[in-house]
Image (tube, rainbow, N blue to C red; front, side, top):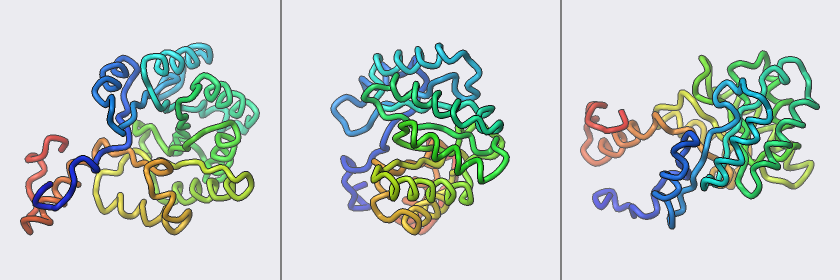
Length: 233
């Protein structure tokens, strides 16, 4: 970091996302830092558990110290066009989150059209989502730029109609720094510079860190290191 003239204290991820049983460990590790603790919930990644258990999962993670909750919606509601059921589900999740931020995962790779992506985005925002997120990272198709543009424009439409700013998170398959740059450019073009900041934009980066490290090393040395030199590769 010193060679790059970067302040290590200002460079960090926005949140650490884990399953429920790791929430207390992460919350303790990031205590006093700006990094937030996030829990995946509601039967992640498929969501095939009873609604009451989904609510219990959210409440347990919040009680254990989660600042953010990533939920998966019931894909069947979207595929069947049952928008009231989707709204009711996300509304209940919002209530169970309390003060914690709610990110709704649409699993866009399992939806049948971009129209459904736009409709589901709008419904989740109306039900109280703080963020809308593309994917769990477990689907065969995860974050793609066409889906991202549709979701960003849904966010813009919602903001223009209500004055409420909702965040966006692409996740899954973003493993190269140049891909992250493309997503940042898309956000700037569609929503402006404010939506390039962590409180309104995140990238699911579990497989991205290694390439960022390689790019920084190239910046210093002029040579790419082997991927296996980096712990997250």
